[in-house]
Length: 290
Image 1 (tube, rainbow, N blue to C red):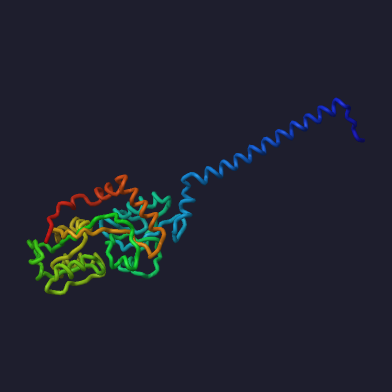
Image 2 (spheres, one colour):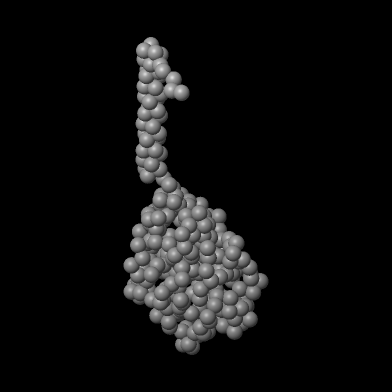
C-alpha cells in the first residue's frame, strides 16, 4: 500500500532532501579542490622521480659509472661496495641529481674514452681532459687538478735525479693510454724506449722489482702508491702540467649538462675541496722538476 504524506510533512521532507543534496555537492567540490591542489604541489616540488625522468640514464634510478679498478685513494675494492675520492664524488653527483643509487662497472681504462658505445652513463677514473680524447668523447667541466709525479725505485739509478737532462738515460715505464706516457715521449724523450704496462698495478710492480728505473703517474695516484709501498718506491718530485680530470660521456649525451651543474654546485659549496683534503692530504709539498 502506498503511504500518503500530508502537506506539512511533505514540505519537511523536501527541505531535508535539499539539505542532503547541498551537502553532497559541497563535499564533491572539496574533493575536486583537494585533487587539483595535490597535483599542483607534486608538479612544483623537488620530486626526485620527476627529476630522474629528465635524466638520460641507462637504468632508471641508477647512475651507472664505468672505471678500471682499483686505484688507491680514488677507487678501492670491492667494486660492489667501493671507497675512495671518486666514489664519494660520484655519490655527491647522484645526490645533486636526485638519483638514489650508484652502480660501478669494471672497464679497461683505454676503453673508457674510446668512441665505442658504452654500457655505462659516464666514466669517472682520473681521466685527463685532452684535445685528442675530446674528439671522440665529451668531458664534463674539470673536477680535479693533476700534475705528473716522478716515481722511482729506491736505491736505483733515478735516485737523486732532479732534472729532465739527468733523466735521459733512465728506463721509464708508464700505464697504457695515460698522459704520463705522453709526457715521457714528448718532453723527457729518454734514450731508451719506455716500457708500457696495461695496468697501474703491473707498472708499480715493475718499478718495485727494479725492471724499470722510473714511472710517471698523476701525483695523487703516486702518493697512494708510495703510501702502500714506501719501502720500495718513492716520489721525489712532480712535473707541473696543469692537467685536469673530467667525467667522460659518449658524444652528444645530454646527461653532461646535468653533471656539469652538479659539479659546479659541489665546487661552490666546498664539498669537492673537503673530499680532496680527506683523501689526498700533503701532496702539495713536492718539489717541481724541470
